Image (cartoon, rainbow, N blue to C red; front, side):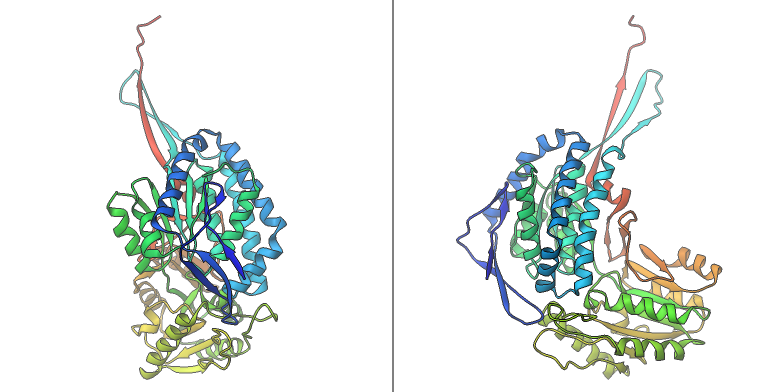
Length: 479
């Protein structure tokens, strides 16, 4: 069984305290132990990042970019092994695990390309003998708190823009899936990245997470997680007025119009709903289907979902692996049970036949109402509840009537419908005639309780930058 130690100031630190136990969700077997950082460990990591930050920021951006490219190449050289680590601790399918690893390396390279592109401004002054310069500078020390559903990629999503812009970082992985992060740290240790620029510590959210969100030396805390976790981070950050960037939950609506290509809609919504075993905050979690195509869609979608295979992805080529833990299974079953008691009908799935791991079948629900819990609250399991609508206005109103606002989708061949949805859907992203999966050059951000700030592309990079305005007045009388 593997044992991992916290990575602080370029070294893996000996540990005498508590260890976090990590289990394979497909077998329920113990696979590793990870050192649970103490408050002292956490402060040590912050101090290491603070100490390294000044000299790191002093390097030209193009030089900082070179380190990102170096780490990207190390990721590619170890891609197969890293994919297997992800599959073992998180239950990903083989294909998705490899996509996550490859995408992470590409993301590091993509952010490195911004070294010569991000820039400040020269602003017009009201005074004749003055220049106003707006500089874009590093914030300082950044902390990144990660979820368990895309744990490897989220390291890069926070680390790459932070380091490229001159910040140093401390990453806290999820206690559910920390192994991949420590394997990443091993690659960093092999690289020439200066000590203290990247630090990795695992531990309890109430201790490590709170310190990483409230310590006076932290300039920005970036969290991807639940709404509840986001609230705690904001409360902790308030004590020192620390900037927060939060990507939280989602309840993405999929609208299928009367003119939609039904086969395309079925294929795309299925892909979105079963992606990562139903555990993706930006993928379709509820569907609104026009009354004219409702029966056709339900029939075809139910058939497609009933054919989804579920099993241990380390031992077979399954469409889905397990949920991450028993709590995920229990929550999904409880929500499903409450929905059925309110009149919902299970068209397929809904019953667990394999208890060797945390497996949950692809499930379709009809007979639900828009206001029902299962249409309003995040499920994080491969369950799709379906509601019928009469016209597009009704569908858009129901889609927007939710506490979340991360992503949305619409299926139509009508340009007017597509353009109207693009304008009226109040979500950070809208996908038209395709599955929900963002591009690294876009901007991944949400409305309402789905978060504050965002990631990816130019605008995501700017999350990690502060502005410094300089007023320079000069004397024209001097020769």
